[in-house]
Amino acid sequence: MNKKELNPYVSVDCVIFGFDLEQLYVLLIDSGSMEGYKQSRMAVPGDLIYDTENLDTAARRVLKELTGIENIYLEQIGAFGDPDRIGKKASDRKWLESIRAMPEARVITVAYYSLVRMPNFNPKASSFAKSAGWAPVSEVHDLAFDHYEILQSGLEQLKRKIKIQPIGFNLLPEKFTLSQLHKLYECIYDKALDKRNFRRKILNLNILTNLDEKQIGVPHKPSQLFKFNEENYKKLSEEGFDNFGF
Amino acid sequence: MNKKELNPYVSVDCVIFGFDLEQLYVLLIDSGSMEGYKQSRMAVPGDLIYDTENLDTAARRVLKELTGIENIYLEQIGAFGDPDRIGKKASDRKWLESIRAMPEARVITVAYYSLVRMPNFNPKASSFAKSAGWAPVSEVHDLAFDHYEILQSGLEQLKRKIKIQPIGFNLLPEKFTLSQLHKLYECIYDKALDKRNFRRKILNLNILTNLDEKQIGVPHKPSQLFKFNEENYKKLSEEGFDNFGF
Image 1 (cartoon, one colour):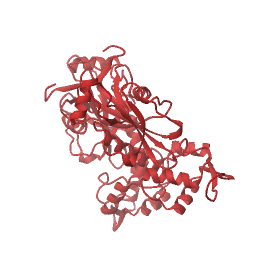
Image 2: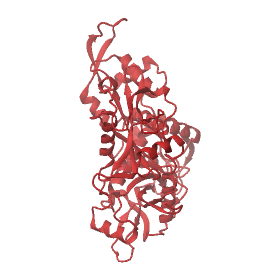
Image 3: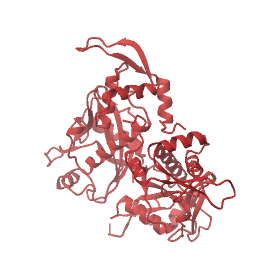
Image 4: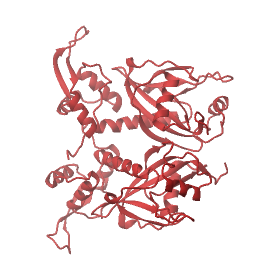
């Protein structure tokens, strides 16, 4: 294959989660704009890799090409390779025929995920994406190909991750309240978490600095503000929590 | 492609760790037996997938074909896709030319791992494997293709896993001592762990049943025997530890 030739057998897909202090969102594109194919067709941003490109580079390139989003850390979820993963649905087959040189090729995809603070990343659709935007995870029930399954795997990965690493840096404003951090954990765990218990355990991790400052201009009793202790946060991110404390 | 045609662009590789109550081992094959290529060439068991096969099925098939080992649970590590991952070394290129229909094809590999109790799994080499056997992980420094890198990723995955799930079931004899369980954790963490601390924390997990029985026929003071409480172990495996105890 030539230098800039697409590899028709391998794609990458990006599951980008966003947090806006209230809800968990996922970045979706509408890929239904091809000639002769007008129906809306939601998918996570993804495309074939170039034959000279490694997987991580491809994921960053594809995300940028379709949504304009760049400079975020993408972590691999894993490979998805059911033989009929892209050919099951008629709408998917029609789309493939309209866009791919080898629509019948079996494509293995390698999925990546990331979690970003939403207001900092405003998607702008380009390439074959007709539109790009944030959808609340709780309202997504169907996607192109096996992307719904890939989304679920991304959520599982996120849940596993917060069991061994702290989360929140880059997701919260520089100064935040314990309620906001609590909300983030509830969004990822997807369940209510006891507030007092959470406060105690998160403070025990020694990653927060009490700023001795309160919120201003809020329509409720202002809360205490915290920031992350960057050094301790980084240390814990690298070492990971350890239940055994070995 | 035909039903039983190999997909020249995607392979699977299996990193199988073994434990013998003393050390951590990895299952390797010598793939250097092809005509015109006599040098020993150690690799983890792996091969191209069939075009009609899903990735998990391919991993189980390839492992069985090359080593005779079957009926173990394989978990995906992830995809490895550097464009030159299989063509860097002259010995790898020579081997590819001797065995593959498309030796120049770019191959993405999907790696799997498992951890088994060694005496229960005795590899028998077949297909293109000249030999198959267990090598102490600490003595493996170089492998075919990017298999050394894949091995290291397998070890990392194992370390992450024991931070959120219990380990030992199916790896230890039905009745075991706390020293044997301690040894398993030390092998995976690859460092010495304080014995008293380990005892306290592992007993707190409530996954062990004290059998009120001691070892017999050992050349040292016999130790207390334990077995896993299957129900509690299974529950904790599914839920995962949680540092926050949410």
